[in-house]
Image (cartoon, rainbow, N blue to C red):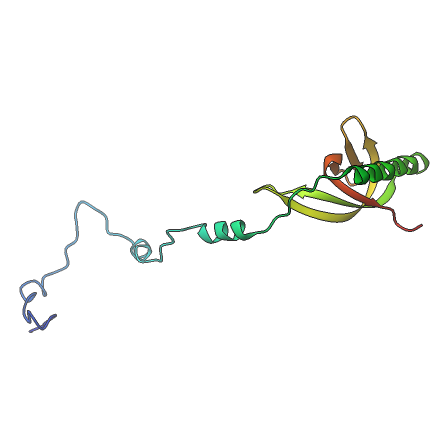
Length: 146
């Protein structure tokens, strides 16, 4: 039987082509699954696409309140305190800054919450759902129409 693998050397492997396949007595034969794994795609940059998306994600800068805004916010907090003295919980719409956990900046979010307590010492608002908001991040308070 004559076989050729190349035009340059038509009979290059004729001397070994019909020899039996070598099986090692020392090393076990590789399973077909492991053999196939050698040829599976290799992702050298695992997580690279996620890192690019994270870098491209936009965050907002924290805005410091001016004196007028601080005064207005203090008045709103006093209103909440007065409401709490009449009812155990005061329902309000709060806009606050939520710092981003992964990068500088964050996002301003508006949410409907029931205030359970104002902790003036810790400068926090405690809500009926168990969440807590530092007054440092409070931006505005709106009262629902009664």
